Image 1 (tube, rainbow, N blue to C red):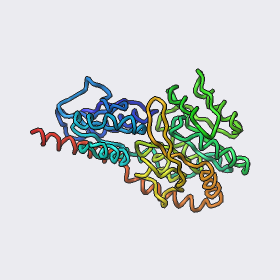
Image 2 (tube, rainbow, N blue to C red):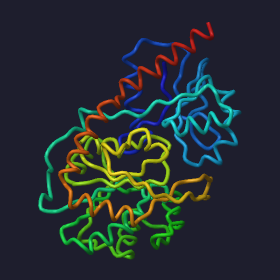
Image 3 (cartoon, rainbow, N blue to C red):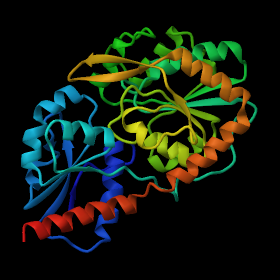
Image 4 (cartoon, rainbow, N blue to C red):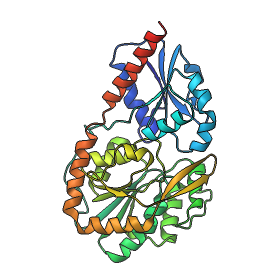
Length: 343
């Protein structure tokens, strides 16, 4: 079974491609079967030249209104479509696609595991990760943390927000909560300017450059709580799940792809949302969190750290169920079933 996916160590698809290719290579060969990354709103293969006798597509989408126009045709073209969340599967089935299922992304437990806080032990460090864009909700983080910092002198903000795609950065101009003016500039410069313009003291910010995924545990382990108020996720959110595997508590939205992993037992759940139609290069309905609720939960977590530790420990237990090996085994089983169907 071949794997046609991007490869890399500093972005989501590349990391998934690396792990799945490695794990699938250790399983029995399935000649004529290829697992593809599906790209774009029209659910096309990442590399058309890799089209095979049997083709399994793996997709994550957030701009559902754009995707669903192509869903039925994609269901006819692909032997099987695998989504990164039950939310995506539900939407495809509603559009008439029946040859679909869900496989969640894994977590490398050899890299991401519990341990003591590594640095800034006298501070309360809030971590926020994911590329800086309207969908990921860093504007909600800025709006809440600005007030949180004003109340507590020991609060620091740790950001892994690098975004190499200018069109994605520009979507932050749609924010109703912060001021962002996009221009041609280095991402780090834009992030610093945006934080300062919205009342976040730069002396209390750690802005992490892009780095190999294996180095991120040090960043996670040097914080006290992670915040993930994402408006929409097509998958289970790799960064959030890695963070939770380190036994760190999170405040997170419990909608869309997050709903596959976030529970009241392993997280402080955001529950107040405003559905909103977002349109940029594509369009979808997303769930906008309330910055005031994020602030309330930050205050609660700050004052109830033992409860946060309990949730973090449960999160680590729950994330142990997410395995790249298991994901690969399930893809392989789909390939075997398709080979039997085609004789």
